[in-house]
Image 1 (cartoon, rainbow, N blue to C red):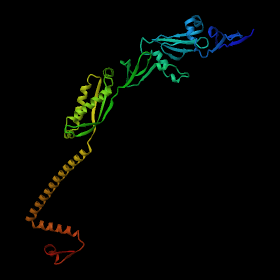
Image 2 (tube, rainbow, N blue to C red; image 1 turned 90 degrees about the vertical axis):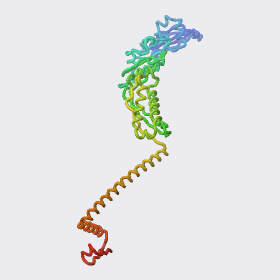
Image 3 (tube, one colour; image 1 turned 120 degrees about the horizontal axis):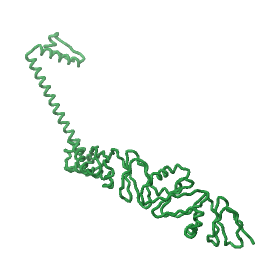
Image 4 (tube, one colour; image 1 turned 60 degrees about the vertical axis):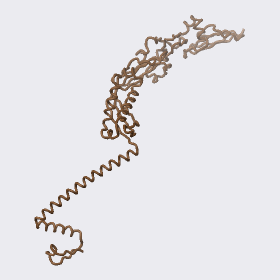
Length: 378
């Protein structure tokens, strides 16, 4: 009679199959199997890999409870339960609801902590601390896709939404939430003063002149939880109200009114938006028009208007100076009319100015002739 020898090592377990069906678990040792037929077969499993991945797993859990209790760690999670699997005290996996598995006992100490998901969406602080910075470990933790980990920085808040409903506001710190059986999201919100620009707004004035206006605003949250409870997108709501306020300010005034008083846009937009934001947990800090861009043809017309105005101002100044000069000449003439000596001095001054501009002077008849007679200039 022939026998086939089978050795199960100390770091192994074996499963004896008869005609493909489970017979029993083989512990470490030497075994002899009758070899005349292929009805008996042994499959060995290394205990370094404790997970029992085999087609017989469900059969063993259903039909061989004593074998399972002796040889395996049994994991059966309900639909509202998650599991934290540790090997030799080290967390290695987050197990999803409905998981059913067997792990070999013996070489690796496998422990599974069952978490009731119905109690809270938030992962307990002690568990969350074990999940942080798992990428720095020698062995990565599997199943982290089922956990939402959030870091809320300083000067910020986190808006926690569960199944589309805003639940609460998270302060600065680290948090973790179960994603199993629910849709969990956290949106980070900056609580500091923020800037918002409304650019490229093409608006018609009351007198049908098209303008392109760029507006800048600063704002902040006064109650972020209220803002996200009442508004789907608070920043987008503020942007729309700034647009409407800007159109109200520009569309009801003429171009001349806007150019004469540019601050009217800031005042109208501020009053409009602050009224619309009241009760929504948002506050407008300031509004300012960055620039107003005119169409090309309107720029040319305004340039001509400005040029004409400046030319008119120049003419007024020129006439004023000519009038003053004429008045000065008249006063000088009156003085010289009554004073011959002053007249003679003026003549000498004039002669001096003339002499500066010529190369040669020929004088005939002495000094008196210079003053009273012919003066020949070459």
